[in-house]
Image 1 (cartoon, rainbow over the protein chains, first blue to last red):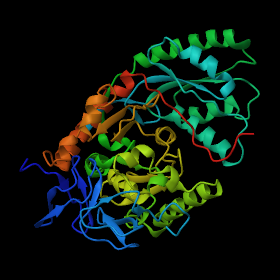
Image 2 (image 1 turned 30 degrees about the vertical axis):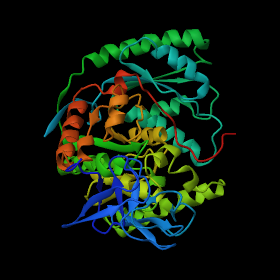
Image 3 (image 1 turned 90 degrees about the horizontal axis):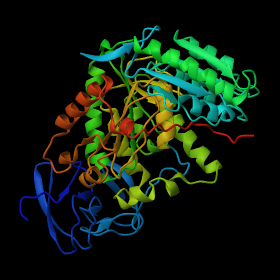
Image 4 (image 1 turned 60 degrees about the vertical axis):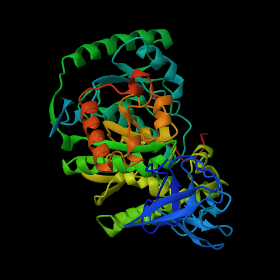
Length: 98
Length: 385
């Protein structure tokens, strides 16, 4: 199991990582970001290609991927939790200011 | 650097050497299809419009069909009209003839009904085929390529690997003096500020932002929050949560160079380099708009797997999802999935894509061509009457 990259952080400023395979709840995943590396315990199962939080987000906080906001948390999201349509919503596409 | 292409009378260069049959209205589509049937090197566009459009849509239909006719991948054009449609077949013929290629117009109501028109049409396209066979490939500078870029059926691998790799290839083509079209405005939403920042002039930046605002407003007027249909269910299953996230992955296809020009849907770029075309994100409408604007070759990234092709332009399918590549080998031209796991660099995959673009421009057949994927759909804004 060791050595195989299981998840990646695309941009140094991101608050989520992307799972490169289906990852079970409870797994400790090593993610590298910039020069550093950290271990994150998954508190929910993460399907392949889906995101998990690198930090605790309060409700209404921006979620960052590609170094840019991809939306706002609709409820509190804990570090290691699956981030998807159940707890993250975009702000665009509703006629707001571009 | 050069590719092997077909020089046209107007000085442009094609990657294919096709005879094209264009029905100027849905009523003559059956005749156009019958004319093209069974003749290798002859294709038709399944146009169902040309009558009953209102406002800007009349111009969009005419511009798209004329753009297909003038595209340098086409050697000669036969327009097949019915005779009473709002899009006058002769006028369409005149627009295409500006490219100095051979254009003929036949009309069902004048030429003796469907059977006689089909027989006449077959005779004409056989002559056109014989003439086209005399045109041979010659070295053409890559600066004459207009490359369309598109993504469809996106998943997490698109923004991570295939779109950045296409972006690298886009930068390489632009370094050769070529042109790259980035488009699909609904999938610019959330990333428009990044593209606007790269605009050559403030006016171009303004047009990018205005286009995004127009699509958001238009969708809401139609009773639709874009977010409810985009990302699609497949995108969401594939790990994409929000439209912003999809858009940020999407614009990677445009590489890193300045945005030189903003053009309307189906309009031809007038500058080299990166050009933004304001099109829908609907895969086939977007593809049709870019080819009508003069794209002679298209790169199309997909995560979930998307088969479409164009009647007149080769479309190179690229995926970074290994399962999709294996499942849909018959549709996928390139596998860049190693980038996802860091086993190949974006640069290396980008170089491979660039080489594939040159090979396909020079005659290598794509999977979509082999499958006979000749998809066509004209973008319009209003209802038909």
